[in-house]
Each structure stands twice: as C-alpha cells, then as structure tokens.
Length: 245
Ligand code: 9D3
Image 1 (cartoon, rainbow, N blue to C red):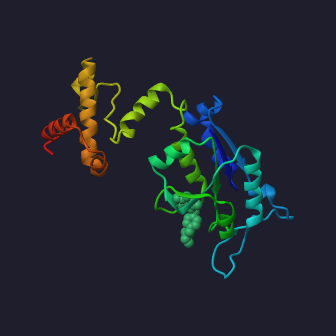
Image 2 (cartoon, rainbow, N blue to C red):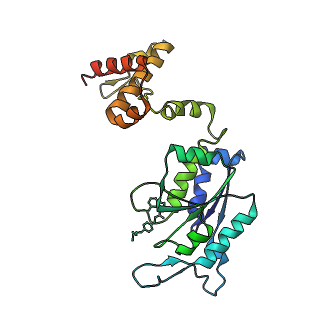
Image 3 (tube, helix red, strand yellow):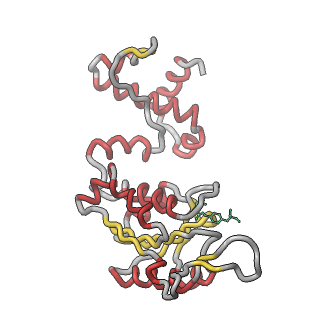
C-alpha cells in the first residue's frame, strides 16, 4: 500500500517508517511513503504557505495555491487515490474505517497546520475528512501517523504470523488477556499457575476467560455490542465467581 502525505513537516511523518512493524514492512516493500511539502510548491520569494484569515481574528490559514499544487503533484505521481483531510471535524477513526482503507492501494493524506486550510481546498480537492478523537492536536501529522499505523496493520503481510494471531482476540471484539514473562515471582506477585503447567488447552481456556472478564469489567460496551456464546457466558460466570465481581 502506498501513502502520500501532504505536510509542512515531512520529517515528522517519515520517522514512522524508520521503526518497528512499519519499518520492517517498508523495507519489505509492502508499504510505501511519499511526502509532499506545500512549501516546495510556493512560488513567491519567501515560499509563503500561510496567510491571515479574511474577516480578521487570531491565527493563520494555509493558502490554496501551494497546498493545491502539492496535492495535484501527488495525484499525478501514481494511480488515482482519495484525498483524506485530517481534521477534528472529520469522522472518527475506528477499526471499521481503518479496515476499509486497508483495502485501498493508495491514499493521499492531507495534514493541516495553523487554524486549518482554506475552505475552498476542501471543496476542490478533499474526498473524505477523518479525525482521531475529541481532543485538540497542533496539526494533522500525528493524526496521519495514527491512521497509517492502524491501517497498515490490517494490510495482508504487514504483521508477522505471531503478531496477526495476537490481533485476533481484539478483532473478535474482546480485550486482551494478561501477559507474564520471567521471573515467576515479582514483589510477591506470582504468575498464575495454569501458565506454568504446560496444558495448552487449559491455557487457552484461561486466556479466553480472562479476556471475557476484563472486557466485562473495563469495556462492557464492547461485550454488549458483540454478544456471547453459551460457552462464553459460562466462562464469564466462572470468572466473576472467582473475582467476587
Ligand atoms: C484550537 C483551534 N481550534 C479552534 C479555534 C481549531 C483547530 C485547528 C487545528 C483545532 C485543531 C487543529 C489541529 N488539529 C488537527 O489538525 C487534527 C486533529 C485534532 O486536533 N484532533 C483530533 N483529530 C485530528 S485530525 C487533525
């Protein structure tokens, strides 16, 4: 999958592809990042990309011409792709939105700075608007990085076998079970005995029960949405008895 990112801070976005899962997938050629800086498309002596808002008021607005030229250069560089503007006014990113984007060969992500972009850019060039949640960031770059990370993990081959298996529980609508590694005891806290016993079926049952119990306690909304089989109802009842909950 190819991501084209329109940004005044390309170095910020590029670091995502230098580490971890995203770094490996980029090395393997499964992911591609190309950045486009509106400043490179500004034609005046000072390479101006922002200007004062008509009507007055605080802050600056990103100008149409350099941003539009950057978007058009990105569009022309490869096959057609939707332009997604990162903005707190957009639809909230969730697993469903990310899954839909993971099926695309290419997306163009537009990052705003200052108070945002000139409204006519939205009319002329933007296909979709996406937010990552109800809090205020300083610009679209971090949001674009969150979107790319969440989407890339759903692209076939980006995760290794172990990583995709571990993702199954959550995509099945449950929180994860607890994890432990050596040593067996820390400050008087022991690893649950079932994990030391080597009974793989018992371990799987225990993990499923823990996932149900933790989801019930921390995210009842997820469990409500998903529903439970008769087997799972019994596992959860068991978990609640054990936790006096
Ligand atoms: C504080 C200024 N706000 C009201 C006057 C408007 C505003 C402008 C620009 C608020 C945030 C931003 C920068 N944010 C993003 O570009 C952004 C964002 C976010 O802030 N929260 C959640 N998702 C996103 S996606 C892009």
